[in-house]
Length: 207
Image 1 (cartoon, rainbow, N blue to C red):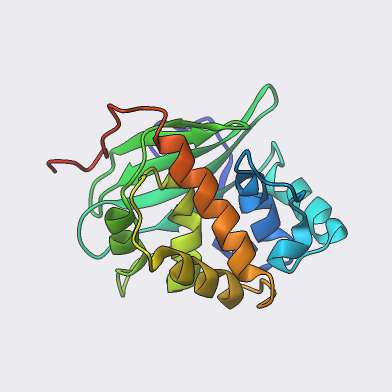
Image 2: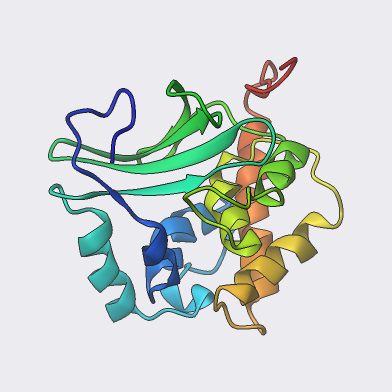
């Protein structure tokens, strides 16, 4: 797999990993801390257990294989998520892509905390809900939504956001009796961080 700017990285398709036990707790658990949470987030919030999470983390963070998750969109930009498994620089990169173009743009990253810009709720939903019929990458809407979720940097999400996120979490295996609580923690973290930068603007603004 080749992606411009990552020529030296051993990139491999990672989409199949999203269906394995332990994936979602690895991907989203750190974002469940909203600064006011009295509960310690645990893998069980995503239907995983500690063994699942530990086992899959070895796959996700393997320096010899960098998993790539492609979320193309039918129209407009899509997203590619790359586990950047450098020995001294582990992190997750979020790239903005367009179908038919080789160029990519890094818009955000996760290295223990978020950096870069992000997407509005409306832009996130557009990407999640518009999988192209003939393209490599993730097709399932719930999986697409959750993969792009860390890019949410919008302080004004609609009231329906929590229900949408809860439904997506249960669709990928989170327990129904705790999914709503998990969704609230995720949204609290993602929407709270955007308020720290009053000059924030979506990378798609005006595009």
